[in-house]
Image (tube, rainbow, N blue to C red):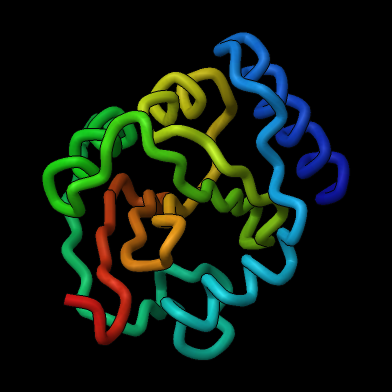
Length: 148
């Protein structure tokens, strides 16, 4: 059943990307990059990465579960990420990291709106910062350890 959910979500994401006129954006060396991201940001092997981020986090609760709408602005103001800049989108379905995409920050809101709920991590290509949303309505931001 989990495999069906994961493959169904992958289809939803890819359909949303097509509708947004975004070309295929899966990452060729996904397993390597996912391991690098996990090593950089996550301590141990938690069921969900956001439970064990290595560096100090800032969390903001969104009562209406609409925090995802703020992610492009947060990336821009907190981390000086251009709206046109590509970032990694790490897809977490039922606490299983399943897919990695490279997409522009500016399409995140529309992409997330077009799909069923899933946890995700938005990560700078240089691995300097991470933004995620958890299942408690929180948007969490975190700089990489030893990154000013």
